[in-house]
Length: 218
Image (tube, rainbow, N blue to C red; front, side, top):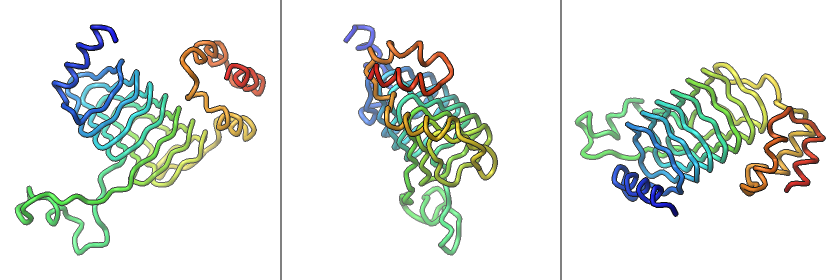
C-alpha cells in the first residue's frame, strides 16, 4: 500500500468513521453523506451524494446529488446525477400515511421508529440515467440500461432498456443468444490482467465472434 493511499484512508476515516468499509483506491468528493456503506475498489462518488445502508461494487461510479438507500450495487455500474435508489415510501396500510407515528420531529413519538424497507438489488454493468427513481424492492439485472427520468417500480431483466413513467422495456441491448453468453461469461469478474487483455474487444461493437474471443481470455 502506497503512502498516498494510506493518507487517503486516514482522511476518509476522519470524515466518515468506522461505519465505512472500503478498499483503495476510492474517490469521494466534497459534501458527501455516507452512513453504513461498503465500497469495493476504484469506486467514485461525486459531490453531494448520499448513501446509506448499502454496498457498492468495484469500479461503480455515483453521480452528484444521487441518493441511495438500502441497496446492493454490482461492479462497473454507472449511476448518473440526481438518481434516487430505494426511494423513501410511506405506509399505505395504516390510518395515516404521515410520518408523525414514527418520526420524533413531529412531536408525537419520543424516538424515531425504523420502517422496514425492501432492498434494491442492482446487477453488474448497469447504466442508470439522470433523474431516475427506483422504488424499494426492485431488482435490476446485469447490463440493463435505465433511461433518464424513468421511474422503476418493477424488476428489470438483464440487458434490457427501460424508459418512461412507469418504466417499460423498449428492447434488449443484444440478441438473446449474446445475452445468454454474457451471463455465462460474467466479464465483470475477470482479473485485472484479463480485463486489460480484453480491452480491444471492449472497444468495438459486440458480436458472437467477440464473445468467443472473450471466452478464450477467461
